[in-house]
Image (cartoon, rainbow, N blue to C red; front, side):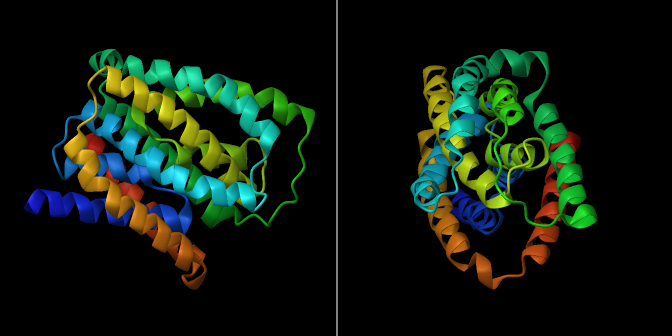
Length: 250
């Protein structure tokens, strides 16, 4: 009972961070399961893929209605990300045998912290206007292929896609977050199917995590405007850095 309560609270915390900042589902959630709850890495990835799909799905419709989804980018990105995420999830156990998933996840987290620190603390870039050029459309499926494999094998999705959409494709932040919510939801759904086929999903774990994740994400999104964004960004950067170090050290 104590473990279930702890998982529910962890899910709520992760959902809250994602609702506030659109960052943290995979980068925070999976290290917490591995380090705090001693869940095997592949099982943590598979279970979080299912919970993450439900969380991403909850915000997708709202982002689409708000006009934050860049449909051409989403379609071209998903064309390669969907099959790549399936393959990444299907062969996650083989990848884990070759290179421990904790190492991959830890490296991705530390790299993400460095990129986010550069974006949010050093640059503090001004808001952009949405402009979709040919080069962005050509690059979208290439990025989708690379990130699809990463999403399927690690369930780290929204955070890294948002970073790439902002820093590589140069999308405005609202459009980067909105488009990410769509492509991540679809890719995680496909990855979840593969993880289910491979037996990588612990339904008790998903059941314990999901209510907190959904409630936390809803509350975070609802009250995001009432908390200073820069303060939240610094807090989550510190949390991610600690998570990355703990996973790599473990």
